[in-house]
Length: 97
Image (cartoon, rainbow, N blue to C red):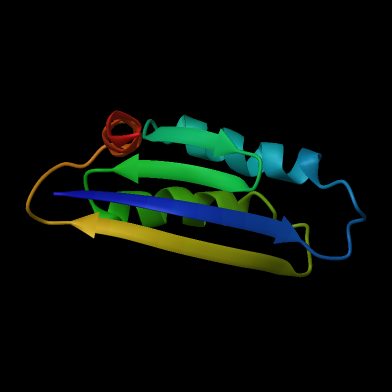
């Protein structure tokens, strides 16, 4: 079983550059011990269960408790039949190019 989520958490009303807020969220995900990857448009986190992934995202949200409003987007890939890893998904596409 595995779960992977692409998510983006953006504070509203904090100006154009929000990298210092994003860094707080990403640091929280990093501390979760789960596999993760930062992209220009969001973060991918991967774990053995949906609960692990949701917990990492929830802890990231808590890092922005000083922000009055957040825009949060989450896309989840959940598999019960096998472990699917970030790198495996990318390698599969690259092999087909």
